[in-house]
Length: 92
Image (cartoon, rainbow, N blue to C red; front, side, top):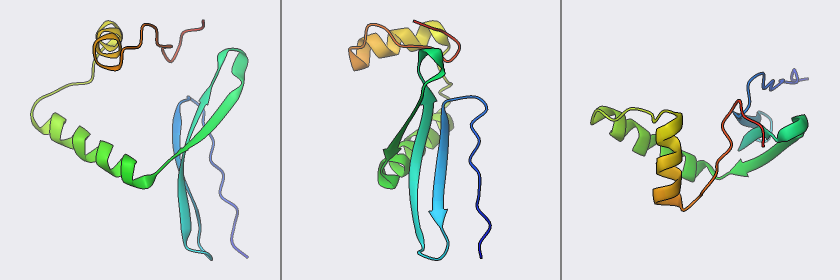
């Protein structure tokens, strides 16, 4: 019998690739928490994750860096039309 794997998430958000060896299946899950510690889990198709990873690699190769907190707000407002995003260590 296969040993059950655990997928701890000590610092949400976490990305888990969960798979079953016998059935040869997998799924990508994103785990996060809302205010008050409520855990939410959603899935993302692997092809979308592969595309995002390829884009990320390309940007880093061109000298881009990850945005800081203030720059994140700018990117969210300008390109996603989101006026408020919740940072990792912030509560509403």
